[in-house]
Each structure stands twice: as structure tokens, then as C-alpha cells.
Length: 435
Image (cartoon, rainbow, N blue to C red; front, side, top):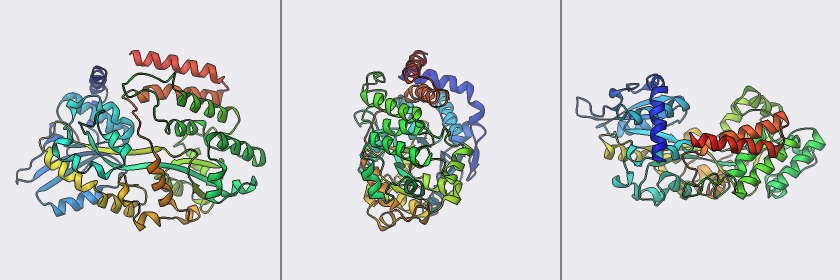
């Protein structure tokens, strides 16, 4: 795996050099090259460069820390999600020009974790003193297999639940209260049965696409494409087979609206009631309110069948290029503490804390929203966060996931037979992993 990451980073060094040097800067940070790694100013202040992607909401807390710690100056560079990760890969491959602190999203963390030499071990700077503050599955994601090397400190999480249109459920003659809806769909098989009822009674599909069903079921599995030893198990894992079978049933039964996530049609579909259920994380609240304003008061929230899953969340790491790992870690202990994560949630309503000690705080337990009929959003998502299971994804998770999702799209949109689509996907996975 280390050899594969080294090859990948070397390639990305050629491909993404421009991305590394074109980011938006804040707080006077350089956008790339040697200057981005500069960590001490002429007036004796310790300067820490922090790279993160846009939309984190952390800027206010960063400014507060600098005011309370006048010897620290934090130069923030923000880029769009993909540009940020590509630029970070480029800098780490080059061995210079990287930041003191780097945010890495959960979908990328295992790829970066495959080479410990790229990062400081935060266990050497007091991380073990605070890791007990975070959800167990986040601690697993943040560390190596035996927990001796800690790559990063968790930021927020994206526990998942089931947003549903009460007007469509009512038209189908189904209950609309959250407890009754949850009781109606304790399993994914029952979820599909309810979807067929809604389709028969109202003509409305259950979900925007079969892919969200596949991802939700897969996300609840204790093992996915690789086992903890890094062995490929995608063909033999019954959890993946079940996720594929159920999601292709959704596709073949017309229970998907054939809408792509993040497309204009997606927001319009939420707004117009083009599908009846949205399986989504806590931060989807803001997206739905912003993109589907006419649907206010028509949504409610219930737990997903069979538990929860996670969509999103990140880690703050300290690359080995940093000359000030202690100061970086001191800052991260403060920034990502339970107190600051709770404050950020109060400020944004979307950054759900990864620190379960704050879940009983009234700010979370009483968190509701009229848009969702005053459903107990905070309680539902805090309960969901506790149900997420730790899982080893592996550095090649996306390499396996992409052909499978493409194959599922071919079943949904092109009418390809599920068995043939699966074989095509697995053949593609094997080819991609050999490269």
C-alpha cells in the first residue's frame, strides 16, 4: 500500500501542481510553494499554516484562538474540496511546501494513512489525553490499526437519518409521526415494501437514486470492500451482496427518481416532492432549507432502518513537514475540544459534534426546526451518531466504490441486468487495482 501511495503521489505531483498554487488565501497565507510552510515570523510569533476546504465554518474560532494566544498567528488557506486534497497530495509528495496543519475529509483519510512518514504522530504530542473525548468510530478512523499512531483529531461528523415527506406518506395512507414511521420500516426490506406502497398509491418514487440506498446499507456494514488486513473481500462479503441486491431492486422497481445528487434537479426534486424520502446526514438540514424553500413544513425526520451511517466529517492532521507540531497540537486540542465543537454547532446548526459528552446539552437535545415540523433533530442525530460502527475502508475504497456505483446507475437508467452489471463492475475493480 505504501508503494501504491508513493506512485499515486508522484503522479499527482505532475497533475495537480497548478491546483496547489491557485488556492484562495485568508489571514495573509501564501498559496503554495516553500512560503506556505513558513512557520515563524520576524516578530517572534509562531506562525502556523492551516489548509482546509471551504465551508467548514471554523474561521470564527480560529480568530478567537489568535486573540487569546497573541504569540500564535494562523495563516489559513482554503480551497474547494477536490482542489484542497489534490494540492495536499502534491505538497506531501514534494516533501516541501506543505502546511503545519491539514484538514483531511473522511473519504480521503485512509489513502493518506497508508504512509506514516507523511505526518507527525500526534500521540507524541498529547493526543491520547484527549482522544477519549471522541466517538469510538472516529478514534478508529483517526489512528493506525493498533492505535499507536494517531494521524488526526476529529472535527464534526455526519450521522444519517431519514428525512421524509409527510404529505406524500399521508397520500399513501401511511402514518406520518416519526415513531410510527420508524416502526413501519425497521429493516431495509420493509423500507422497499413501503416504497412500493407509496409508488402504487401516489406514483412517487421513494428516493432520488438507488445509489443512496446502496451507500446507506453499505455504510452500516462492519466490513465493506477490504478486511482489516487490507484483503479485497468485495466479492465474498455478504453485506455488500445484500446492499447490491436491495439497491438494484429499488432501481428495477421504479422506486428511484433517477436524479443525480448535487444536480439542479436534486434540489428541485426536494422542493417539488419528486421523491418521498431523503436518506441524509445532519448537515443536509441546511442544504434542504436553502434549495427547497417551498417544501418547508412538509418534511419530518425518523431514524434510518437498521441503525445509522455517516456521511462526512474530517480530521485535522499535522504533516511531518511542520516545524511546530507542539504548537499545532495545542491549537487543535482547543479548536476541536467538546466545548468548541458545541459552540460551533450553536453558531452554525450544521457542524454536528464528534464529542458525545455534549450530546446531552440542551442546545442539542432541544434542537428543532420548523422546516421539519419541529422534529427533534438534535436528539435523532445524536442517537444516530452513537450507532455508527467502526470500519476499515482502506486506501483503495474509492477505487472499488466508483465502478460499483456506475454499474448501479446502468441498472437504474439503462435497464442493464443486475448480474451482468455486477460482473462488469468487479472486472473493472480488478483492472483498476492492478494499475
